[in-house]
Image (cartoon, rainbow, N blue to C red; front, side, top):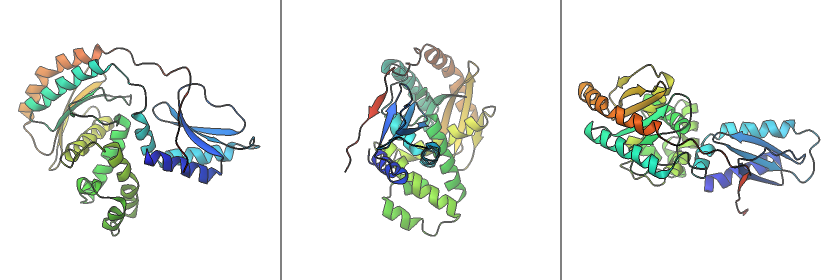
Length: 287
């Protein structure tokens, strides 16, 4: 909640508006005294002014730029969005993936598709609010950190002042700024995760990003990351994630036996719940 409140405070400051809030669903605001920007996942941020605007184009553009710059906001809002399927249905898929990961001696197993932000299933004991789009930018950040020789698992556990001090001499500058800006968001999204959970989480995000970039690829083996993917129904991918080299033959055999049951579970999920007809407003106390 702290990062969401800080974002709204920033909106109020940058746009010199009277108030700002998050909304989910419903019709977009049409009042002359407000502007809004869409946020991935069905949310929007609305800035409200004390009087009608003569020219809303400039504040609209500024608000859209803020949303684009603070991509982690959408992830923090996901946990407050309507669920995409019934908990029982999701739990069956998660349980099947947990069995698959255990048999394949993998860090994690997940199911994604090629287009939507939906994470259809995960073997993680307590999944966070991250969807596939959030996992992708986390994975890309982790890839950049690994290429620069930076241990992102260590960094995510640091508070912001310590993080800034640790990264002070890191080059390139752009990576340093991305890490300083996004690691606190990643930490808040994963506030339920302990130190032992982060390696699997970052490896999973890197694997998801890799499969989304090139869904025709079925495996990768690196010193610090390995993954094996198999597709079904044309668009879905089951991914096994490893922390390094793994037995391709062994993993492929376990995957081959598990995919039919996972496919049946995924394809039997109920339709995604439609967005509510009325907008949902997420209030925050101003301090």
